[in-house]
Length: 165
Image (cartoon, rainbow, N blue to C red; front, side, top):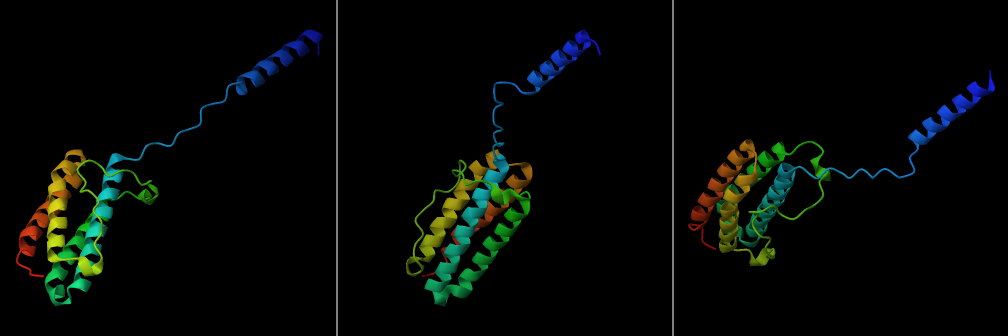
């Protein structure tokens, strides 16, 4: 091998190495922001879980009204299952984020002894009134489900008016 060929290959190797290892570090890959539909679904599921829990505490606090309140709780459990069915796989790792616009505000959860039918009606009213704003940002399939859930919650407000503490 000639001296010229040796120097040429060394120079080419040096350029290749320099091209592979830049002196400026590459920016760290930032995780993709969570899908807005997944964030909305996660918030809706959390809200439904709180409502189902509120009914459970109401049944415990008002044993004489348990039979009247149980159908309401069952409908909310069915809503919860329908919402969970729309949640994409592996979305349990979505970090908690602020509630999307239109979510009912978090209210202090009353203790089991303090839950009344009036508390249930207020929770139903807040949930039903939040549905139109939530539908504005939802996919068509989720919007249809939210419309049905909101209608059911609105009917619950009226029906709970017939249940006495």
